[in-house]
Image (tube, rainbow, N blue to C red):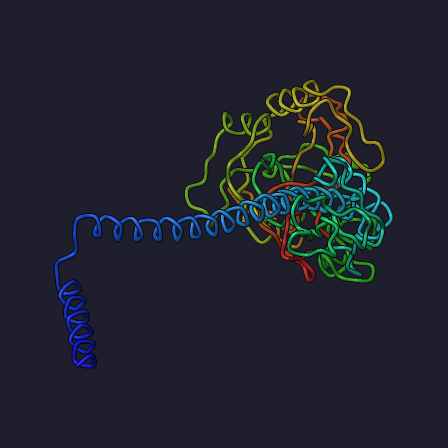
Length: 406
């Protein structure tokens, strides 16, 4: 009997619990469930926000140090560019002056600054300057490294690399090449016979007797750098219509532009005078043909030459360069030298350009058809079309990809 009563009580308890569980949750129960869910989401969001903040801070740290390294790289590259161009300019005047080129590169690197602890001059040494055996290519290495004892001071690198001591390594390299220029504009409207070996010493070119082989070695003829650099020559105004068949040395003749192969030739006394004082716009190169300008136009020649001298009266040649009040003295001129083996045509004949000389206008004397110009051969940096002529008086210096450049 007692056992039946106990079992019935158990059955009723189970049925009651089952009924309670099957009933819809009360409003209070639902509120508790939502709260627990919200509470759990807020906790997850807090974790995600914390992780995101750590990642963002990491990127910020990286951005600061990377920006510092990039700034140093840009500054070192600028210093290397300036240094290598300065060194190349020395080599352009004398390809054997490697000591002078190295010193000039070091000097110009030091005129630039780059970040280190703060901003400080870029210091390089002799071993940071490499010059090719022919003296035509120079490479400069600038640095902020632990190895060279001038690293960049950073802020957060040690967080990633504890052994770094917050010091970064940055390097840059630049190379420059010296190249001859064999075609350019802004020539003065005169042509001069190129130099030949005058076997009979009569001052005139005599076919079959005199020797002319421009650029030949050894004992080559033709005006060449560096052999003729610094040489003084006096040239006299001549009239191509009054010349013998073969040219005489030391004479300059009026010419027209453009080259014969370049289209319409611009002629006339007005243009002749303009081009003495200013810049003719046509590219003239070795191998081009130029047409004679009839007559000598002595008054226009005298006036034009004197005006060039008067613009820069105190300029002078110091043994290597022209010292002037101008960045480029108006007394520095370019002239076409023509092949003497081509006979004169008494009409509107032409000459073939064998060399283009860079010269300093030292002086002039005489008047009328008996006027003379004193010129000195120089080496000069100018624009134009490059070539591989080692005897050119004109050159250009340009940045190029180097064998060790980054």
